[in-house]
Amino acid sequence: MTVTMAQALNQALRDAMTADEKVLVFGEDVGTLGGVFRITDGLTRDFGEDRCFDTPLAEAGIMGFAIGLAMEGFRPVVEMQFDAFGYPAFEQVVSHVAKMRNRTRGSVSLPMVIRVPYAGGIGGVEHHCDSSEGYYAHTPGLKVVAPATPADAYSLLREAISDDDPVVFMEPKVSYWAKEEVELPVQREAFGTSAVRRSGNDVTLVTYGPQLKTCLQAAEAAAELGYDVEVVDLRTIVPFDDAGVVESVRRTGRCVVVSEAQGFAGVAAEVAARVQERCFHSLAAPVLRVTGFDIPFPPPKLEHTQLPSVDRVLDAIERLQWDDEPDLTHATGAATGGAGSPASTTGGAR
Image 1 (cartoon, one colour):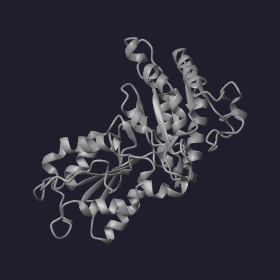
Image 2 (cartoon, rainbow, N blue to C red; image 1 turned 180 degrees about the vertical axis):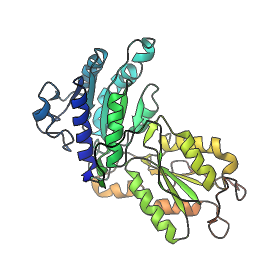
Image 3 (tube, rainbow, N blue to C red; image 1 turned 30 degrees about the vertical axis):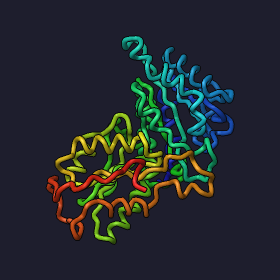
Image 4 (spheres, helix red, strand yellow; image 1 turned 45 degrees about the vertical axis):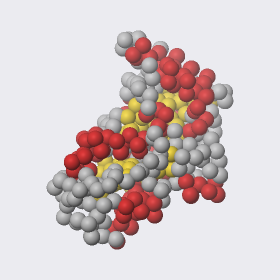
């Protein structure tokens, strides 16, 4: 069947609530309305107001309530409605959600999921389009998941709800209506497993979430220029699939990291550093980044200038050191040429 990511997420919540009566869904407008994006549509009707319900507009209160429920054996799934709406609850997440297991020497776990609709591409205004994954990924004790397809949205959400540790589940708003031929339920994927969405031999694009579509389009456009591009979808930011990313980059010898969030001190910077550390002797060129600019998210009519585009990804690919033509036979994992003068990538490829 053809399903959207929104439908896949809804079905994942339904199946989890059916399988375990301890799973509770709550947040702002998730009950009768079914959520701003209708991800929780019909759950209150089918499971009752004790299982899926609305809360006051107080994110810190929502998070504190979820912490208490998780400590008592429930599995709360809370929605922050929009990415930047979660900031008032951030102190609770950092100080308590992420640290409870360590603080209690493992005697108290918090099996809870924090759903965060995030990123741009929908024409939203400030506080509705942030890419806030870096804040959570930087916090020890949290798992951070970022699906890019309907199938992964289903499988990873089911995995997140069943996990005994807290999971921040980043949902790309622009992908809610992306469709995929898939039969639900799909097999659940273990956290920390990336996926090769397109095979190639010349350069690896590493991405996640809403930028997977951009990278696949860029890879197709690059093929017309003679570049054989591989696209790796991280799927989970924490835990990070070092083995999968390293295997790809050692084989291609070149890497571009694509992320919608701002470049400075972001997830893309961490990925680039890990690739450089682990693949240095296989790299034929510096690792580059294509990211959002280091500015607050712009007004809707200007958001296209902030988001990574196919042209910006192609520009980064062409900035990599090539001899005269792309080495289409390069598959040994050894560098084909010297690193040359390092190129500055501070703030991402512009």
